[in-house]
Length: 295
Figure 1 (cartoon, rainbow, N blue to C red):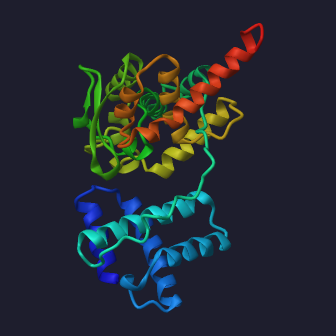
Figure 2: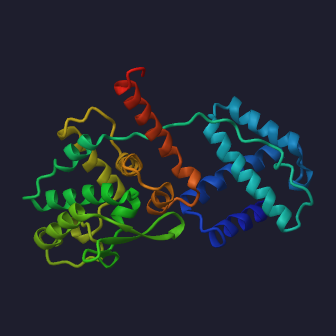
Figure 3: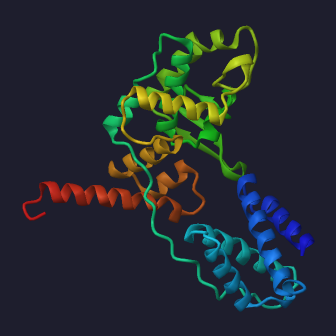
């Protein structure tokens, strides 16, 4: 079964283009399932059935795993069985009959437009690091980037003249996203007045640099964002994803098309983007309650 798991993970990498983080999670989930199969006395995947898969999910729940984690386990197991059928290792798929555990909808944390402005105006652009941080925050919100996409952004991927950035998201999938005039201005200012001072006569392909011409790390940016959130006196837990969530929500509240937002976020499945429609529905409901005479 070890060999089959490796073949499946390689298939997901090469054929499906899944990210290293997702592959690592699937690998852990399948190894745990493999151990459960062995402990149950089955000698391999051909001796498993739907009942055994259900027992595994019950065992995961007993071990304290929440519905979301159990759902991810089942997604990995379902895909593994489909692959085994495809490769003619087994004839029937026992996982196809198992439903995903019901998960409660977790709405993303969103900042209001006023809170976003407060946060984005906090860095001091007269200092080299402040100009860099101002450009990073503005770009994160303007393009709805993931933090990994932001810190790995290279000079060659930014076209200020046309107002677009080219990013490589999960599974190295490429997309081109507009950035808007404010982000353009802040990036231009940073490149003209601050980047050279931070580089200190060194060279780097990355647009946002820290010490020794190295790119800012994800952890480094998290610390910066937390500090700016405190300086802006925002009484919310702010993460890089907060600005990505706010980007999507504010676009939809402004009337943007869901499919267009899906493309800009780099979501493969529109159902992932649809979580933001719940946020905007809540916004509309609140407005109705506040302003309608019978709200």
